[in-house]
Image (tube, rainbow, N blue to C red):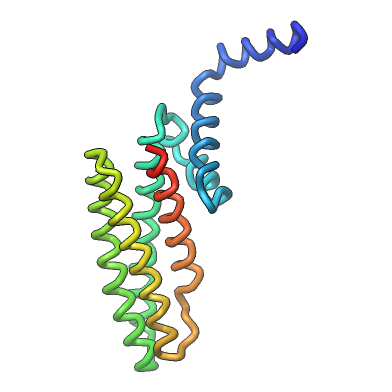
Length: 170
């Protein structure tokens, strides 16, 4: 490294140490995940993640976004239930609402477990929430209906997978 490059690097660290460290922390955390681009896009926009000093905080933020997505999906299901005419679709949506009610509870339990550093419990609860998303999707297949929830279920599962990958590094 030439002297000018060294000086620029030192100046950058002096002026932007938190931003450089936190961005590297987000990059490091997302590097463990199977859905890195989703992880990066989720965490880079979150002020709490951008100011995080450790992976535990990053895991908490990732879990927060997973819980938020579960709530959004639950609201989407409720909206679809109001307009569903087909009995098979109504049944599948009712089952999905129950699945995501459970998933929301499990994400909340995961948040408590993460706060208590009970990482195995986090993995158990998040995995159970992922199974709920799979069960929701399966309900449409059982009714031989194209799922209106596929994209949402997939995103929730990917967010959950990212939480598991980050938590496994704690």
